[in-house]
Image (cartoon, rainbow, N blue to C red; front, top):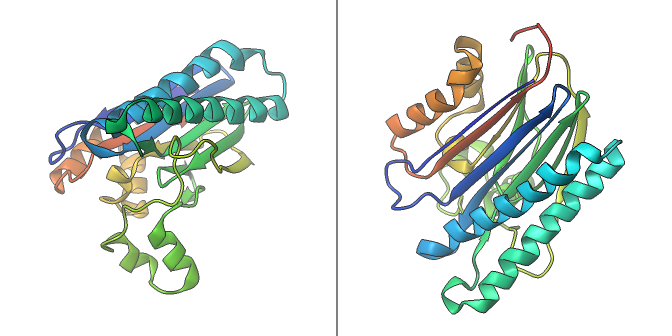
Length: 248
């Protein structure tokens, strides 16, 4: 397996409120988490970093001892719940941080099985020989409008309320998460990203970059392309490639 990640402040923001971490624990086990903070000049930065640090602690210390997918699932959920409690507690202790929160997408690949928890609009994609597929569903106001038929997916990309999310880590004392799992094929690539990337690039464009460039270069290339198109937000991308000789 291979793991690469990168985060960038972009061209318009004064601080980077994204955070990312990940690790190859063994040839058959890897994890990554991506968060995109919200809540004022300092709050978003603090929320995303607390969440990533808290989740990383559990992944690094306990994941290698989990024997099956059910144990892994319980660990993932517990780690996110602990991160939620930590961010929420911090926000209650400091009035300037009240209301801060962050998106979260946490993924683990173990023996070719992908397990994901997420809240918010940071995304997970699987990229393979047959193309690119978004496997997370945005928890956002515009996604609800798309689901109800009020607007189209194309209209959602430039909607004035596209940045309003309906779920976040740390805003309340509990968190509602979506869970998904699937089997991956040799050569499949998992990509996690914040909306600073997905708002600038269409899915088919992302896929073309993966087809054209070496995997270790992809995070920087995707970020550079987003910045070339305005860099209106922080940009973060994380990649895990499953073991196998087959290429896209």
